[in-house]
Length: 395
Image 1 (cartoon, rainbow, N blue to C red):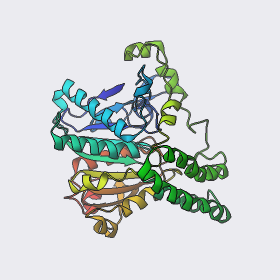
Image 2 (cartoon, one colour):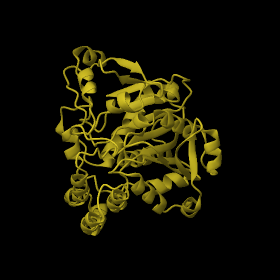
Image 3 (cartoon, rainbow, N blue to C red):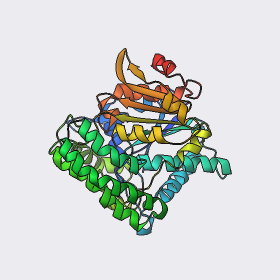
Image 4 (cartoon, rainbow, N blue to C red):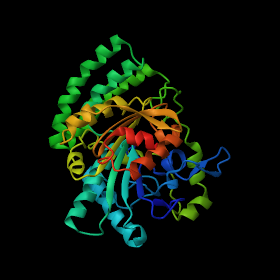
């Protein structure tokens, strides 16, 4: 199942695909709560989102992997377990989409998403770039990819859990010292997962997740997706309106999904991807950067799990030809409508943005800043505007 929203500005705007994480959470969460053209009112009706990303792009949201949202298969063998399978499916989907809608095939193309999409996005970007080089189908005009509060390099994220939790006052120093004893075991185990990628990776998921689980126990009823809030239910947010809306017979009929019940996040897909969690998906990125494909990593400052600190660390540690220059480049303020909205660092095709006053779902918490971020990122060439001052000025 996919949703395509033509740009409210121009059909010539970039095509931006959004991948929701989980793994197994429906793209509908983004459509109605993050950056889609609509939000759901308390009376379960739709209202226009003033800051939907369709104001600057032709927005494409996909329920993926198979089994997520309204995407389904009657064959259990179609349930996916790794990024090769997921990215191949997405690539095949794009080929079919641009074949059916050739008027958009020449537009600039960007891949975006958040959370577990920190795994999906690098693999998918690498698959698209590979397909373009092989000239095996319709050329996709890939210009860049953006990861929001994503899980990309688990070994680096693992150590950042405790550092971030201590910095934010979620745990005490005594808790920090105790929980940190688990970190070296996790870091060593992840190296094994990088070469094996199967059963050992599933075991490592449980080993490494014990670190964050210990922190979350100490956090109590704090919303670990946004430390400023209280946790409400399993996902810590109240998404009941979306399930009420999408499970209406009239809505299901309009979408052509028959009797499929919508579930915000699929436990089947989540379980199937456990062998994939601890893989390091940074690997495809350096080659993409070397070929001029832009990467923007952004993170809300109040998210505990895939926090901004861990994301900043892996971006800085990533080895590519511009690493030293990126590390040495200055941080500048990200200004939106005259107000400070974050801190930005760029060099060449790489950018990192820490977003102020936002949790995990940056476009939901800071919709205006997120839309401006999209506009400037898709319109500017970071390799030419390596001086972050220009980007901020244009904001």
